[in-house]
Structure formats: C-alpha cells, structure tokens
Image (cartoon, rainbow, N blue to C red; front, side, top):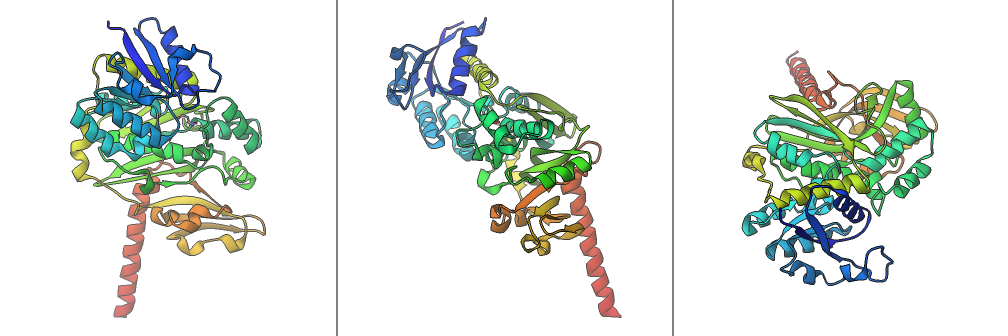
Amino acid sequence: MKNISIGLFGFGCVGQGLYQTLNQSKNFAGYIAKIGIKDPRKKRELPSHLFTTDALSIIEDPKIDIIVELIDDASAALEIVVSALKAGKSVVTANKKMVAENMQLLVDLQKETGNAVLYEGAVCASIPIIRTLEEYFGHEPLTEVKGVFNGSTNYILSRVFHDKLDYETALAQAQDLGFAESDPALDVEGYDAKYKLCILISHTFGLHVHPDQVLNLGIQRIKSADLEYASAHGWRIKLLGHAQRIEDKVYAFVMPRFVPINDNLATTENEYNAVVINGEFCDNQWFTGKGAGSLPTGAAVLSDVSALSYAYKYEYKKESHKENVFFSNDSPVKIYASFQSPEDVLLNDFDQVIEKYFSYDHCYVVGTICLNKLRTEIWQNNPHINVVLTADTLDNSLGKLCVNQLKVEIDELKKGQRLRKKLMLQL
Ligand code: HSE
C-alpha cells in the first residue's frame, strides 16, 4: 500500500485526534507531511518545520496526496476545499457548516474535477452514517432520519437530569471535554445539529436543503419548570434532529423533545449520538456511538483518509430523486410551549389548543402549530418562550404522530369545520 502523504489544515481538538489515531493505527500507511495553521506563535508539541501559514504551498505541493481540512472557520474551510479540488486533490473535511451550506457547490465541483470530498467526521463523529446511507441504503426508499446529533447538548441534558447540575456548569464541562464548538451557541441553539441534519437529508432523500430553510430551536431556554414538567410525566428532554418524507414533501427541524425514559433515545447519554432511519424495506434502524470528542472524530477522519486511499467517492445515489421531492415547512407539529408570563403567551398562533396552564410565573400551552409559525421572529427570538415537542409516539417511532397523523387529523378537523359551516348556511 502506498504511504499516503497528508496536508492537514488545523491542529485543534480534531486535528490532534487525527494525529493520534494515525500514529496508533496498526494497518494504515499514511503520515502528516505538513500542517497549515493561522497563528505561528502558538506553542505546539510537534516540530516547527511541520507547520506553515502558507496554505497554497500545501495545496500545490505535488508530494502531498490529499488534503484534510479541520479548521473552525467555514468560509476559510470552503476556500481550502475549493482550491484543493481545483488543484487536483481530494479532500477530507469535518466542517459541517461549510458542507451543509455549500452542498450543491461541492457536489458540482466533485463532478467537474473528478476529485472527492468526504465528510464522515462532520456528522455524529464516530457513527459511520454517511457511507452507510450512500452504500448500504443507496437503493432503499428511505422515509425518515432523526436522532441525537449533538454531543455537547446531550452531555448538558444528561448532567442536568442525572446530577442536577446547573446549565452553566454542565456547559463548561462540555467545553472542557472538547465536545463544544468554539462558539457554544452553535451547539445549544441547535445550529450544529441542523448542519448535520441537512447533510443527512442530502444522503437520505437526495435533496440539498440549505440550513436557512430549516427550523432550529435549542435547549438554552429550558427552565426548571420545564424539567419538572418532564420528570412529572416520566420523560426526559433530548435535542433531536428530525427529517421525514411524506409523499413528495420532506419536513425537517431541530427541536428539544420530551422522550419517555424507556425510549432508546432517552438512554442515549452524554456525548453519545444516535441516528435512527426508517426505510420502506428495512423499517427501523438504529446507529449509536460517540458523537463528539478528539479521538472519535479523529477516527472518522482517518476512516475517510483511508477511503480516499482506495479512491472512494460519494456517488450521491439519491440525487436522481431530487426532482420528485420538495422541502416544506407547512406541517403542523404538536408542542409544549412554556411562557414566562401570561403576556408572552401566543395562543392565537396555535391551530389547536389541547391543554393550557397559567400561573403568575409559569404558563404553558400544549397544542398543534405550523412549523412556519415557529420560524417567525417572535418564536425565534423571545427568550421567555421555550418549545419542546410532545412525547406522543406510536410504536417508538418519534415524530410520526407529530407530522403524519396530525396532518390527517387537522385536515379532517378543517373538513368538519367547512362541512358544519356549509350546513349552517343551508339551514
Ligand atoms: N460540537 C459538536 C457536538 C462536536 O457537540 O456534537 C461534534 O460535531
């Protein structure tokens, strides 16, 4: 096997994880030839001749076989990836924001240049889900992909529930353990999970959905009253990403959700992630593993580097279906929304109210509301409103009730209302 020489960009948590896994792997022939960095003054453990701030000298070096991009900044990452592809090199990246926001461009550039971009490490770290969707499920009509896609928030929620830690302490721990993004708002507000969800949507349904189109509500507004409400019902709260195809429409969102304590998603703890897919033939499939951390992410990157060594490429097998499916936010979802005071309550936005509770410092409403409504500014920006999807589930399949059945129920309800109006007019 050829000894692969790697041009690495970034030597943070994941870059060091790659270095370690590469050195400890028994049967992979590869080495890091050069490392591109931003700050040459920073103290590093490897010899200084390995580091350079001259990105082009790495990308254009004929002795370097492949580029591994592991930096934080999505725009700089895109520049590196595009230049590398154009310079004739294949790339491994773990930058989920960059991939999610530029999926169509990356697909087109790969076709144009014949070089590959692999990004298994960008989605749920150690869970080998992208290649599984591409290869094993390449020909299966999939209907749903959902799960716990963010290790930091899952860690925070686990510690808050089990150890009764306060939110800030749990977040600081997630940062110390190297799980959180440099800007942890990306984790707790659900952006990180949304980028991963968008990448999964591309490989599940062949549809490239820009993250701006997808609703994300995070865990930062969860109050102790919400935690008490969950515990009193025998539920936990998990931050879930969810995409579902119903006929020709794909619905997707990232939101906290009440999960019964005996559900597999509830027992996915700490930095572990879970991906659940549903297919017309295979039915329900579960994947679980560490979704954050230096070594699990480094291992996913190493696996992609190894895949490039035998010229592996994603074929985007589902892309041929993309003309037949559309992304939509026109579905109702069933939520619990808590408000700090009665003035905050947005009762009129609900299609249907099932339960109401008002007290001077805590109010909540359980009901159905359209995803489009939750994307409006007031729901997005009011720090006193917290939204959690309800726990109603059928046969352990989260979300089916939330989107599918509710749509039928509401259509029936509207039909009934129209019929009643018609009858009243006739009377
Ligand atoms: N901040 C991310 C997480 C890292 O917590 O899941 C892995 O993508």
